[in-house]
Length: 362
Image 1 (tube, rainbow, N blue to C red):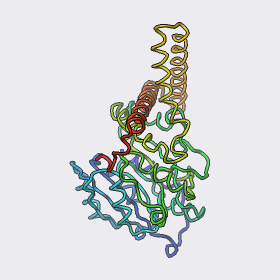
Image 2: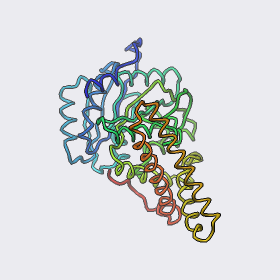
Image 3: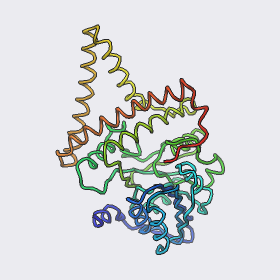
Protein backbone atom coordinates (compact mmCIF):
# COMPACT_ATOMS: atom_id res chain seq x y z
CA UNK A 1 0.00 0.00 0.00
CA UNK A 2 2.72 2.50 0.96
CA UNK A 3 4.66 1.87 -2.28
CA UNK A 4 1.55 2.62 -4.30
CA UNK A 5 0.98 5.82 -2.35
CA UNK A 6 4.62 6.92 -2.81
CA UNK A 7 4.40 6.31 -6.57
CA UNK A 8 1.19 8.29 -6.77
CA UNK A 9 2.70 11.29 -5.00
CA UNK A 10 6.11 11.35 -6.69
CA UNK A 11 7.01 14.72 -8.26
CA UNK A 12 6.68 14.96 -12.04
CA UNK A 13 9.96 16.75 -12.57
CA UNK A 14 12.61 19.05 -11.05
CA UNK A 15 12.07 22.78 -10.71
CA UNK A 16 14.49 25.62 -10.07
CA UNK A 17 14.09 27.55 -6.85
CA UNK A 18 15.57 30.67 -5.35
CA UNK A 19 14.70 30.35 -1.70
CA UNK A 20 15.42 33.92 -0.75
CA UNK A 21 12.62 35.09 -3.08
CA UNK A 22 10.02 32.48 -2.20
CA UNK A 23 6.96 33.22 -0.05
CA UNK A 24 6.13 31.50 3.21
CA UNK A 25 3.25 29.03 2.96
CA UNK A 26 0.69 28.10 5.62
CA UNK A 27 -1.22 24.84 5.11
CA UNK A 28 -4.48 24.86 7.07
CA UNK A 29 -5.91 21.42 7.85
CA UNK A 30 -9.19 21.35 9.83
CA UNK A 31 -9.76 17.82 11.17
CA UNK A 32 -12.32 15.85 13.13
CA UNK A 33 -12.08 12.08 13.65
CA UNK A 34 -9.56 11.57 10.84
CA UNK A 35 -7.44 8.80 12.38
CA UNK A 36 -7.90 6.55 9.36
CA UNK A 37 -6.36 8.97 6.86
CA UNK A 38 -4.43 11.66 8.71
CA UNK A 39 -1.07 9.89 8.61
CA UNK A 40 -1.24 9.74 4.81
CA UNK A 41 -2.15 13.42 4.64
CA UNK A 42 0.64 14.60 6.93
CA UNK A 43 3.26 12.30 5.42
CA UNK A 44 2.47 13.73 1.99
CA UNK A 45 3.06 17.25 3.33
CA UNK A 46 6.32 16.14 4.97
CA UNK A 47 7.64 15.04 1.55
CA UNK A 48 7.12 18.37 -0.20
CA UNK A 49 9.88 19.58 -2.52
CA UNK A 50 9.21 23.18 -1.45
CA UNK A 51 11.71 24.37 1.21
CA UNK A 52 10.44 23.06 4.53
CA UNK A 53 11.67 26.11 6.43
CA UNK A 54 9.14 28.14 4.44
CA UNK A 55 6.17 25.89 5.31
CA UNK A 56 4.00 25.75 8.40
CA UNK A 57 1.14 23.34 9.05
CA UNK A 58 -1.81 24.39 11.18
CA UNK A 59 -3.83 21.35 12.25
CA UNK A 60 -7.12 22.55 13.72
CA UNK A 61 -8.77 19.78 15.72
CA UNK A 62 -12.55 19.95 16.03
CA UNK A 63 -13.12 17.91 19.21
CA UNK A 64 -12.02 14.60 17.70
CA UNK A 65 -13.18 11.52 19.58
CA UNK A 66 -10.60 9.15 18.12
CA UNK A 67 -6.78 9.22 17.85
CA UNK A 68 -6.65 12.16 15.45
CA UNK A 69 -5.01 14.57 17.89
CA UNK A 70 -2.47 11.98 19.05
CA UNK A 71 -1.47 11.30 15.43
CA UNK A 72 -1.03 15.04 14.87
CA UNK A 73 1.09 15.41 18.01
CA UNK A 74 3.36 12.49 17.09
CA UNK A 75 3.84 13.93 13.62
CA UNK A 76 4.70 17.34 15.07
CA UNK A 77 7.41 15.79 17.28
CA UNK A 78 9.37 14.33 14.36
CA UNK A 79 8.57 16.74 11.52
CA UNK A 80 11.16 19.17 10.14
CA UNK A 81 8.28 21.47 9.24
CA UNK A 82 6.73 23.85 11.76
CA UNK A 83 3.52 22.28 13.04
CA UNK A 84 0.95 23.99 15.23
CA UNK A 85 -2.05 22.14 16.66
CA UNK A 86 -4.99 24.39 17.42
CA UNK A 87 -8.32 23.70 19.10
CA UNK A 88 -11.70 24.20 17.46
CA UNK A 89 -14.26 23.94 20.27
CA UNK A 90 -17.24 24.24 17.89
CA UNK A 91 -16.26 21.09 15.98
CA UNK A 92 -17.45 22.49 12.65
CA UNK A 93 -15.44 23.05 9.47
CA UNK A 94 -15.87 26.81 8.85
CA UNK A 95 -14.80 27.73 12.38
CA UNK A 96 -11.85 25.38 12.03
CA UNK A 97 -10.79 27.06 8.80
CA UNK A 98 -11.09 30.54 10.28
CA UNK A 99 -9.05 29.56 13.33
CA UNK A 100 -6.35 28.34 10.97
CA UNK A 101 -6.45 31.34 8.65
CA UNK A 102 -6.43 33.87 11.50
CA UNK A 103 -3.41 32.22 13.13
CA UNK A 104 -1.45 31.57 9.94
CA UNK A 105 1.79 33.47 9.42
CA UNK A 106 2.45 32.68 5.76
CA UNK A 107 2.12 34.84 2.66
CA UNK A 108 0.06 32.13 0.96
CA UNK A 109 -2.64 30.03 2.64
CA UNK A 110 -3.48 26.55 1.34
CA UNK A 111 -6.75 24.96 2.42
CA UNK A 112 -6.35 21.20 2.78
CA UNK A 113 -8.22 18.39 4.57
CA UNK A 114 -7.27 15.39 6.67
CA UNK A 115 -8.58 12.78 4.23
CA UNK A 116 -6.53 13.88 1.24
CA UNK A 117 -2.93 13.68 0.02
CA UNK A 118 -0.77 16.07 -1.99
CA UNK A 119 1.95 15.06 -4.49
CA UNK A 120 5.47 16.02 -3.50
CA UNK A 121 5.48 19.06 -5.79
CA UNK A 122 2.01 20.29 -4.79
CA UNK A 123 3.13 23.32 -2.75
CA UNK A 124 5.88 24.14 -5.22
CA UNK A 125 3.50 24.17 -8.17
CA UNK A 126 0.91 26.25 -6.32
CA UNK A 127 3.53 28.87 -5.49
CA UNK A 128 4.93 28.78 -9.04
CA UNK A 129 1.54 29.39 -10.64
CA UNK A 130 0.39 32.04 -8.18
CA UNK A 131 3.57 33.99 -8.89
CA UNK A 132 3.65 33.34 -12.65
CA UNK A 133 -0.01 34.21 -13.29
CA UNK A 134 -0.20 36.96 -10.64
CA UNK A 135 -3.59 35.49 -9.74
CA UNK A 136 -5.19 35.99 -6.35
CA UNK A 137 -5.52 32.23 -5.92
CA UNK A 138 -4.78 29.02 -7.81
CA UNK A 139 -6.26 25.53 -7.80
CA UNK A 140 -5.92 22.24 -9.62
CA UNK A 141 -7.44 18.84 -10.16
CA UNK A 142 -8.84 16.86 -7.26
CA UNK A 143 -8.68 13.13 -7.98
CA UNK A 144 -10.72 10.62 -5.99
CA UNK A 145 -8.77 7.77 -4.47
CA UNK A 146 -9.22 5.08 -1.83
CA UNK A 147 -7.08 2.99 0.47
CA UNK A 148 -8.90 -0.25 -0.21
CA UNK A 149 -8.37 -2.14 -3.46
CA UNK A 150 -12.06 -3.00 -3.51
CA UNK A 151 -14.69 -2.68 -6.21
CA UNK A 152 -17.20 -0.39 -4.45
CA UNK A 153 -14.78 2.30 -3.15
CA UNK A 154 -12.95 2.36 -6.48
CA UNK A 155 -16.22 2.47 -8.41
CA UNK A 156 -17.36 5.45 -6.33
CA UNK A 157 -14.10 7.24 -7.08
CA UNK A 158 -14.34 6.56 -10.81
CA UNK A 159 -17.91 7.90 -10.83
CA UNK A 160 -16.89 11.09 -9.01
CA UNK A 161 -14.12 11.76 -11.52
CA UNK A 162 -16.32 11.31 -14.58
CA UNK A 163 -18.23 14.11 -16.36
CA UNK A 164 -21.54 12.25 -15.96
CA UNK A 165 -21.06 11.89 -12.20
CA UNK A 166 -20.78 15.56 -11.20
CA UNK A 167 -21.68 17.31 -14.42
CA UNK A 168 -18.17 18.11 -15.63
CA UNK A 169 -16.91 20.18 -12.68
CA UNK A 170 -13.62 21.76 -13.78
CA UNK A 171 -11.80 20.89 -10.56
CA UNK A 172 -12.71 17.22 -11.19
CA UNK A 173 -12.43 16.80 -14.94
CA UNK A 174 -10.77 19.95 -16.32
CA UNK A 175 -8.06 19.51 -18.94
CA UNK A 176 -7.32 23.13 -19.89
CA UNK A 177 -5.79 25.90 -17.81
CA UNK A 178 -7.81 29.05 -17.26
CA UNK A 179 -9.69 31.15 -14.75
CA UNK A 180 -12.49 29.60 -12.68
CA UNK A 181 -14.61 30.55 -9.67
CA UNK A 182 -14.57 27.35 -7.62
CA UNK A 183 -11.21 25.63 -7.09
CA UNK A 184 -10.54 22.70 -4.78
CA UNK A 185 -7.80 22.84 -2.12
CA UNK A 186 -6.88 26.29 -3.35
CA UNK A 187 -3.84 28.39 -2.53
CA UNK A 188 -4.88 31.93 -1.59
CA UNK A 189 -2.89 35.10 -1.16
CA UNK A 190 -3.09 36.22 2.46
CA UNK A 191 -4.41 39.66 1.59
CA UNK A 192 -7.63 38.17 0.18
CA UNK A 193 -8.87 37.52 3.71
CA UNK A 194 -8.11 41.05 4.82
CA UNK A 195 -9.95 42.43 1.80
CA UNK A 196 -12.98 40.11 1.53
CA UNK A 197 -13.35 38.63 4.99
CA UNK A 198 -13.12 35.07 6.25
CA UNK A 199 -15.21 31.91 5.91
CA UNK A 200 -18.95 32.18 6.58
CA UNK A 201 -19.31 30.25 9.85
CA UNK A 202 -23.01 29.57 9.25
CA UNK A 203 -22.33 27.12 6.44
CA UNK A 204 -22.27 23.45 7.39
CA UNK A 205 -21.32 22.61 3.79
CA UNK A 206 -19.97 24.49 0.75
CA UNK A 207 -17.90 26.91 2.86
CA UNK A 208 -15.09 27.17 0.31
CA UNK A 209 -17.62 27.49 -2.53
CA UNK A 210 -19.26 30.48 -0.84
CA UNK A 211 -15.89 32.12 -0.17
CA UNK A 212 -14.76 31.60 -3.77
CA UNK A 213 -18.03 33.03 -5.10
CA UNK A 214 -17.71 36.00 -2.79
CA UNK A 215 -14.19 36.93 -3.82
CA UNK A 216 -14.63 36.31 -7.57
CA UNK A 217 -17.88 38.29 -7.63
CA UNK A 218 -15.85 41.25 -6.39
CA UNK A 219 -13.05 40.91 -8.89
CA UNK A 220 -10.58 38.35 -7.50
CA UNK A 221 -8.98 36.06 -10.08
CA UNK A 222 -8.56 32.31 -9.48
CA UNK A 223 -6.37 30.38 -11.91
CA UNK A 224 -6.90 26.67 -12.58
CA UNK A 225 -4.33 24.29 -14.02
CA UNK A 226 -4.56 20.50 -14.32
CA UNK A 227 -0.83 20.36 -13.62
CA UNK A 228 -1.63 20.85 -9.93
CA UNK A 229 -3.13 17.66 -8.54
CA UNK A 230 -4.34 16.39 -5.19
CA UNK A 231 -5.84 13.07 -4.12
CA UNK A 232 -9.02 12.90 -2.07
CA UNK A 233 -10.10 9.78 -0.19
CA UNK A 234 -13.69 9.39 -1.36
CA UNK A 235 -16.48 7.78 0.67
CA UNK A 236 -15.97 4.01 0.82
CA UNK A 237 -19.66 2.99 0.76
CA UNK A 238 -23.00 4.07 -0.65
CA UNK A 239 -24.51 5.06 2.70
CA UNK A 240 -21.86 7.70 3.43
CA UNK A 241 -21.87 8.80 -0.23
CA UNK A 242 -25.65 9.32 -0.04
CA UNK A 243 -25.34 11.37 3.15
CA UNK A 244 -22.56 13.52 1.69
CA UNK A 245 -24.44 14.56 -1.45
CA UNK A 246 -27.81 14.93 0.28
CA UNK A 247 -26.29 17.47 2.68
CA UNK A 248 -24.18 19.15 -0.01
CA UNK A 249 -27.26 19.80 -2.14
CA UNK A 250 -29.31 21.02 0.81
CA UNK A 251 -26.70 23.63 1.72
CA UNK A 252 -26.21 24.65 -1.90
CA UNK A 253 -29.73 26.08 -1.87
CA UNK A 254 -28.80 28.22 1.16
CA UNK A 255 -26.90 30.47 -1.25
CA UNK A 256 -29.83 31.02 -3.62
CA UNK A 257 -30.09 34.76 -4.31
CA UNK A 258 -26.73 35.59 -2.76
CA UNK A 259 -24.54 35.14 -5.85
CA UNK A 260 -25.37 35.14 -9.55
CA UNK A 261 -23.25 32.05 -10.12
CA UNK A 262 -24.20 30.17 -6.96
CA UNK A 263 -26.28 27.76 -9.00
CA UNK A 264 -25.32 26.37 -12.39
CA UNK A 265 -27.35 24.41 -14.93
CA UNK A 266 -25.87 21.13 -13.70
CA UNK A 267 -27.25 21.76 -10.20
CA UNK A 268 -30.82 21.70 -11.52
CA UNK A 269 -30.57 18.45 -13.47
CA UNK A 270 -30.95 15.95 -10.55
CA UNK A 271 -33.91 17.74 -8.87
CA UNK A 272 -35.65 18.24 -12.22
CA UNK A 273 -35.14 14.57 -13.01
CA UNK A 274 -36.74 13.54 -9.72
CA UNK A 275 -39.61 16.01 -10.05
CA UNK A 276 -40.34 14.88 -13.60
CA UNK A 277 -40.33 11.21 -12.59
CA UNK A 278 -42.62 11.86 -9.62
CA UNK A 279 -45.00 14.02 -11.67
CA UNK A 280 -45.14 11.61 -14.61
CA UNK A 281 -45.46 8.69 -12.18
CA UNK A 282 -48.59 10.20 -10.61
CA UNK A 283 -50.09 11.19 -13.96
CA UNK A 284 -49.37 7.75 -15.43
CA UNK A 285 -52.27 6.37 -13.37
CA UNK A 286 -54.58 8.52 -15.47
CA UNK A 287 -52.81 8.87 -18.82
CA UNK A 288 -50.98 6.53 -21.19
CA UNK A 289 -49.08 9.55 -22.51
CA UNK A 290 -47.73 10.19 -19.03
CA UNK A 291 -46.80 6.53 -18.67
CA UNK A 292 -44.92 6.71 -21.94
CA UNK A 293 -43.17 9.87 -20.79
CA UNK A 294 -42.24 8.25 -17.49
CA UNK A 295 -40.74 5.21 -19.21
CA UNK A 296 -38.98 7.44 -21.72
CA UNK A 297 -37.35 9.75 -19.16
CA UNK A 298 -36.38 6.86 -16.88
CA UNK A 299 -35.09 4.82 -19.81
CA UNK A 300 -32.98 7.66 -21.18
CA UNK A 301 -31.41 8.34 -17.81
CA UNK A 302 -30.64 4.68 -17.10
CA UNK A 303 -29.25 4.24 -20.62
CA UNK A 304 -26.99 7.30 -20.20
CA UNK A 305 -25.83 6.12 -16.76
CA UNK A 306 -25.14 2.62 -18.04
CA UNK A 307 -23.32 3.92 -21.11
CA UNK A 308 -21.14 6.23 -19.05
CA UNK A 309 -20.43 3.42 -16.57
CA UNK A 310 -19.32 1.13 -19.37
CA UNK A 311 -17.13 3.82 -20.94
CA UNK A 312 -15.42 4.63 -17.64
CA UNK A 313 -14.95 0.93 -16.82
CA UNK A 314 -13.34 0.30 -20.22
CA UNK A 315 -11.02 3.27 -19.81
CA UNK A 316 -10.04 2.00 -16.36
CA UNK A 317 -9.54 -1.47 -17.84
CA UNK A 318 -11.86 -3.06 -15.34
CA UNK A 319 -15.36 -4.07 -16.42
CA UNK A 320 -15.84 -5.46 -12.93
CA UNK A 321 -16.27 -1.84 -11.79
CA UNK A 322 -19.24 -1.20 -14.12
CA UNK A 323 -22.00 -2.10 -11.59
CA UNK A 324 -20.32 -0.09 -8.82
CA UNK A 325 -19.95 2.98 -11.06
CA UNK A 326 -23.58 2.65 -12.20
CA UNK A 327 -24.87 2.43 -8.62
CA UNK A 328 -22.66 5.36 -7.63
CA UNK A 329 -24.30 7.50 -10.29
CA UNK A 330 -27.74 6.58 -8.96
CA UNK A 331 -26.77 7.40 -5.37
CA UNK A 332 -25.10 10.72 -6.26
CA UNK A 333 -27.91 11.96 -8.50
CA UNK A 334 -30.83 10.81 -6.33
CA UNK A 335 -29.22 12.12 -3.14
CA UNK A 336 -28.36 15.45 -4.74
CA UNK A 337 -31.78 15.82 -6.29
CA UNK A 338 -33.65 15.07 -3.07
CA UNK A 339 -31.26 17.21 -1.03
CA UNK A 340 -31.75 20.14 -3.40
CA UNK A 341 -35.54 19.85 -3.25
CA UNK A 342 -35.50 19.59 0.55
CA UNK A 343 -33.07 22.50 0.83
CA UNK A 344 -35.28 24.67 -1.37
CA UNK A 345 -38.28 23.88 0.82
CA UNK A 346 -36.34 24.28 4.07
CA UNK A 347 -34.31 27.41 3.33
CA UNK A 348 -36.40 29.22 0.73
CA UNK A 349 -40.07 28.34 1.22
CA UNK A 350 -39.93 27.93 5.00
CA UNK A 351 -37.30 30.71 5.25
CA UNK A 352 -35.18 28.77 7.72
CA UNK A 353 -32.10 30.45 6.29
CA UNK A 354 -32.92 33.36 8.61
CA UNK A 355 -32.45 31.05 11.61
CA UNK A 356 -28.96 29.76 10.75
CA UNK A 357 -26.37 31.30 13.06
CA UNK A 358 -23.62 28.67 13.25
CA UNK A 359 -22.67 25.60 11.23
CA UNK A 360 -23.33 22.14 12.59
CA UNK A 361 -20.45 20.08 14.01
CA UNK A 362 -19.15 17.54 11.51
